[in-house]
Length: 367
Image (cartoon, rainbow, N blue to C red; front, side, top):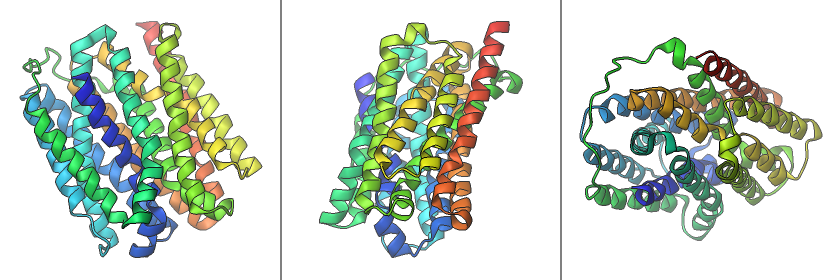
């Protein structure tokens, strides 16, 4: 289960950086400015949001192997339909649909691991999420190389093939049968701070990935490949952050969310003020500051809520909403005030992560 989940999340990591690493070619072929690019980049988390929310209740009720296979296959088929003559609306539809499949298998993996390992789920969850981070690290330069050697659409085709292979393999998994939770609903007032944290974190993640290349080119005057390196650097920071948590996780409490938010805000604001040409360091520092937040969040949700599929789906949906709003807002700001200010808008979401972390800590302390 862990090996299969890690393989699938590795592909998810590549999917996360696929558009960002292909920015120059995609924007040229589809004639996209910063605002349109922000909209297209937001299509992935928007679709993922639909998938994660829909998959939560289904996980609590239906056969898990079939859900896995269907989600992977749907994502793969939609990735195969991407081509270089799409309209912006057509591109958004395809990316959002593929994202819905990916969002569904994200929820299923998170909930399945939390269900199987319960209070010991921190280690497998962080390990699997680290596989996604590794996919993002290697994915950015790999996508750039494939695009330069062939055509940018080939990267989409190869990722589609990987999803279809894992869809077939998932039919051989043996997972526990669903047992409908005794808790009929998840109280919004209880889960709200967790949703806020998910919204903020995924917003940071999606925007940093989408705007690293335009930031490097337009703000720092660097070639596009330095932006792709910055994407890899961001995800390398996330990976290191998550691996460090594996070493010190027993000492981490709910207050770690607030610490991540504060450190992320400092990193983002400092880089924007200095307008550093060392874009790789700028993005790596931000990833290092906030990277551990999401798997820790899913671990806490798995331990606190009995309707794990539903709770994980709601958190994933909130994250997807953040992944839609933050890049769109960054693109709109960048169109009017410059890409440096657009990227600096991430400080708003990092500060929101700090506030959500403080609320989560207060709720846990009271209970």
